[in-house]
Length: 216
Image (cartoon, rainbow, N blue to C red; front, side, top):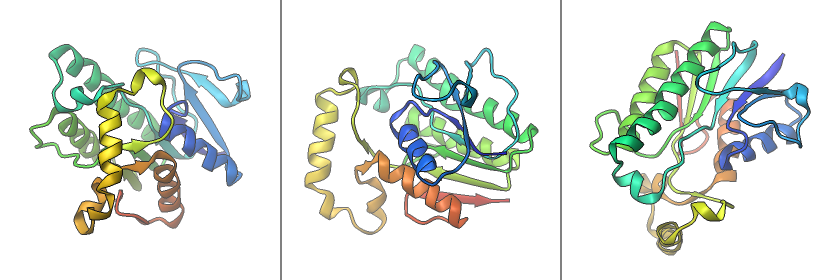
């Protein structure tokens, strides 16, 4: 049996999570949009939102997928972007989770966002909060949400603009002032998020202030 079924292993945090899984010699299977030449074919299954296969049984499900947004879209999305964003970050995530529950998977680990709240006036945070609420309602034994601030790590040049540079520059500059309840808003390396998410899962409790652990 696989320890983890992983969606989003080609992304920033998902890639680091996969590295951690490999480092700890855990068994995994990847659900990918394009086959990776660095992974054995037997460890990969192609999927898309219109063709989501039934999931094999495993101990846990990991979801690190997300619709690509620029900085300004995190603040305000046009209607067409809202539709695409919701289709991935809410509808697809819930579709995957329901299939996982049907397959008997008991645990789920998901990358969410700091400030996620279904009552938020910010559409991005509202959808993340709705996603969390719907996942919890499915009835998994244990749910881990990672709620990081701005993620640090190597990105494709097309995803790095002046706003990203400013967030990282001023975030690092003022990092010492983020204390107490404000620590969770700090810029955080994606590798650290992946490590803390897996550590929390293995300890069966939150091991950092960016990991939210929910149990049935």
